[in-house]
Amino acid sequence: MRFGLNEEQQAFQDMARAFAADELEPFAADWDRRAFFPVETLRKAAALGLAGIYVREDVGGSALTRLDAALVFEALSAGCTSTAAFLSIHNMASWMIDTFGGEAQRRKWLPRLTTMELIASYCLTEPSAGSDAASLRTKAVRDGDHYVINGSKAFISGSGTSDIYVCMVRTGGEGAGGVSCVVVEKGTPGLSFGAPEKKMGWNSQPTAQVIFDDCRVPVENLIGEEGQGFKIAMMGLDGGRLNIGACALGTAQAALARAKTYLTERQQFGKPLASFQALQFKLADMATELEAARLLLMQAATKVDAKTSDATMHTAMAKRFATDVSFEVANQALQIHGGYGYLNDFPLERHVRDLRVHQILEGTNEIMRVIIARELLKS
Image 1 (cartoon, rainbow, N blue to C red):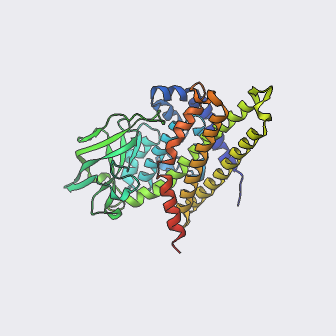
Image 2: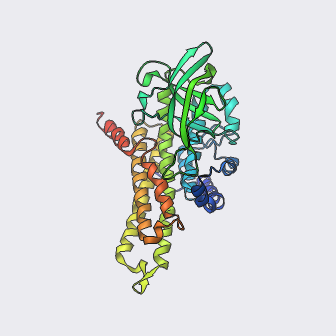
Image 3: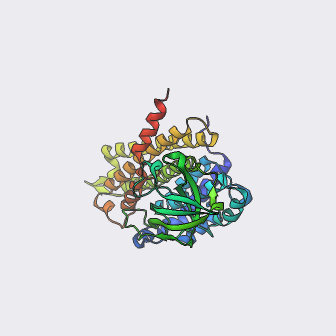
């Protein structure tokens, strides 16, 4: 059991922090205000190896661990939660192709995904299939050397902008065993996109439906085998939950730092706010909860890397706890700022808006409790 970072991990973290400070934080408020998707900034991150964090090196990836990735995403999200989270989604889609795709598929897409010449989206959720992902209805029917896909996906980050859509579709019967994973490329006839969703947060990335209307996709775009899609999706979500938890931690840590500064600078009743014990205790609790969440997340990442039998349960624990704690810390940081925290002159209101969705996506925190309880009750 080791709690310190090694030299390589410290270097990754320092690099990501510097990128966040220089390339994300100064622009995050403007991107949020304009709902601007900073593709060129994402490509700068890719040039540092951050678009293929756990993709193999022979196709341009960095071949790092899930623990390394958690450190990176925590650091990046201190600059812009929404942009860091999209980078996590791109990494997850690329990992699926790298891990389950054939050699020809890896060579076709990954060298351009790791540079973000191509941008990837992940398509699982549907209008009528959210938490019950195995009930998805988007259907792919074999027609010679193509699948003909009909249906739609909901809440897809990057929809309309991304070049590659890693989609879970039904090629077989009902339930998880009938789900397969197929790559659909932008420009494929029958592929279209809904209107951009108007969201509470995560405004620096587009979100919309992905729609399939007799969309003909080559069978050679099947990732893995027919019926393997749900397994691919769930394995991807183990990593995605770590990343979304890490992004939450980084945002909350930035909010905590601002609260600490504000407490020392702001004066009321003739003395700094930091001299009031009630606020000291609040700050202490915020820091303690964040540290506990971070340790739980790092342990879960270590278990995913080691492929332990309890890794899925621990990723659910870490995601639930980290996202709940981070939202509460950001909300308390806003409260400490009083009326100023409610203004968009300060980043606190954006932190709160961006963090709220972390308790919903990659499996709601209620579903995380279902996973944990199911694993606990197995024996």
